[in-house]
Image (cartoon, rainbow, N blue to C red):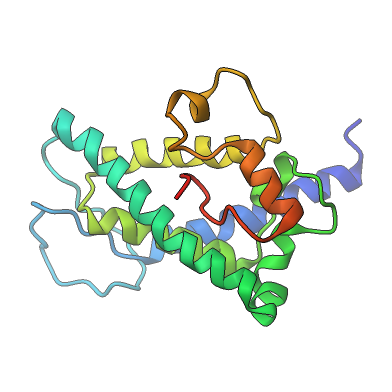
Amino acid sequence: LWSAGRLRSIGWHLASYCTPLLLLDFTTCKRYPGVPQAWERPYIALQRVRLLPMSPPTAWELLWQPVAALLIYDAVFYWVHFLLHRSSWLYRTVHKEHHGVDRVLNHTVTNRLTLVERVSLVLLANESLKMVQAHPLSRSVFVFHFLFLLADSHSNLDIPVWIDKLSFGWIGSASAHCSHHTENCHSFAPLFTH
């Protein structure tokens, strides 16, 4: 049943998840290639106008930009995640909430992040997309695949015919990420298997 406590918990999780994302979206300037800047705007300021590209991305851009941004994100996050586990102070203050008290991986773990970790991950994704000069539509493709891969890796399901098997082991599996949460000593990449 939907008790008052359950609704408050859902409301708190929704607010704690959406507020940093909305603040970052409304305050960080998006600059896209091929879009003339009508005026020079600071990177961090209230963004009331969106300057978007006039043309859609090519099919090739729609393919390579999200993949390249995912690879950049994953490579940088690997080292950050590795350092979070190697430094006991960083682990306690920034990352321990993600691993939580329960050692069993489940769907709620994906969203269990400190504010510092959540904002850092969003900024890292944004910077990865900016490095490849991703079109806004390519960004949407990136977000869809990124969230799918994160949810899949935290699902605790080892499906016999799934993306991790079909990708010849290049994409990380839920079982590898589950072992990361139980052993805390390997599988630091969130998406791929490097």
